[in-house]
Image (tube, rainbow, N blue to C red; front, side, top):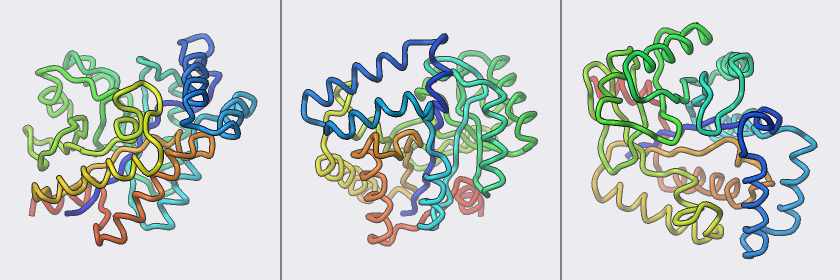
Length: 268
């Protein structure tokens, strides 16, 4: 089994949310709950408060530096449409698309549109124009889909998608590869609540069970989704968990590949 690491970029700054949604107040309500329930420290809580004055909710370069040091060829999914708490502008998107490409990363859209072919195709075209790429894949924001989403993605021209969370091997829809994934930071650390419900050791144990199940099912690829915003001491459990996970995979001899490499292997 090999591992495919990807990162969803849901936020870039706090200020992008002030007039667009209620994400910021909700985050601080959640942080207060986590503090009072003993899931985060007072230092961590005040670090989150301090983020307001930094106006920085992305940790892309720090995360890339860690991945690069560990030889992890990660893929980054960045939004080019607004919706469901994703509120940054196309100008911001374009900056980070090209910044990440310059760093040697693979980049695709963190898609919003899932309901009709016309909207999916339009979003595909926007990302193609901003990135100047002709081959790329996607992941749907909040992994929202309907019965036609994957077929319409394939028709739109995506090389791959990774919006299905399930214990399945990759499979093809038309000319598009669907890569189901099994590990997502929020599902590990938060579920069944909407705030942190597990500590570091509990999160690690839950992750080991998923990896063991994927191994038992003889899946060729283990899909992992980690949000760059949490690679910060403001979310210490999340950051420590991700760093532990990468080391755990290395220790257990699980090789890292990106989607492009996986597709070449599958199509041999």
